Length: 379
Image 1 (cartoon, rainbow, N blue to C red):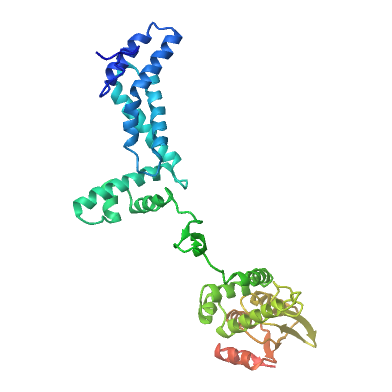
Image 2 (image 1 turned 90 degrees about the vertical axis):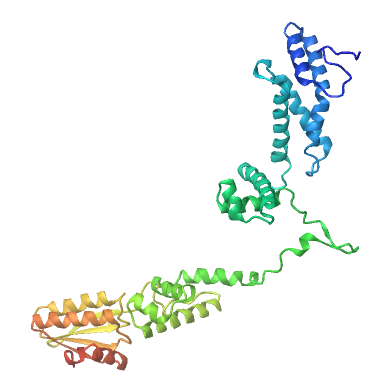
């Protein structure tokens, strides 16, 4: 008859009866001294070690050394013995759950080469299991949609789980490629020369120079070169003519080229500030008339300034004639035409004669097309 240890379990056995050994241990520890309790615990642990080893061997072949798995299983066994309560059921069932949980926790927390969130790790295992089941059922590799339907998750979650599986055992960048003596490393095959690196300085310079341009010019450049808008589309959105857009773009690009080639950026528009659009209105009295001289482009940004100057001239006391000198105006857009129409109506209401002088050919054509040529006489 085989000898028995202090717990009452046989020391030589073919298959352990863990439940009987655990019950005997629970009965004997009730009145045992601390020294006897420690010996009883050691005997039970030693008796259960083969069982823990068998559970550990179920997880071999997954990239971990068997010795490491056995150590993890033994740690789970210690926790199972220390927490065992015979009133809650079978020790064997409790030990299986505790040891298996410890092994799974080890694979989840210790064996991944790249940190992956726990939910993604768990889903990755479920996707792998579902893929094997569906492959056997469908006789082909399941699609992401089929895996998502089986697991009750979204397709994006399935893709994330499949992609994260590569983080379990990532390849080393120092791994040799090829069998020759002069084999290169895997990292040498990744990446290449960034051809745009040389242009980085120019890009930073252009970014700084763009901030020096007026807001309107910056917006037009962004619409043209980043939004891929045509000049006609830009003109429609900004309420100016296509020709005006072309002139403004050419002026802005010319300034950028000059600024890129110089150490000190030139001043915008020959000394004008970057937010000043160059239109000036001056009023002078010559005899019984007021002469309103306009210099610069009349567009949506400057039209209101012209409106104010002309209204003051028409409203001035004792004025019979207002002369609008357009000799210094290279362009008038729709906003400028609207101002002139408004002023003609105001002058008629106040019985003040208004005329234009020195209109350049392009401006004269704009006035003719808009119908102002028949209303505004030439002085």
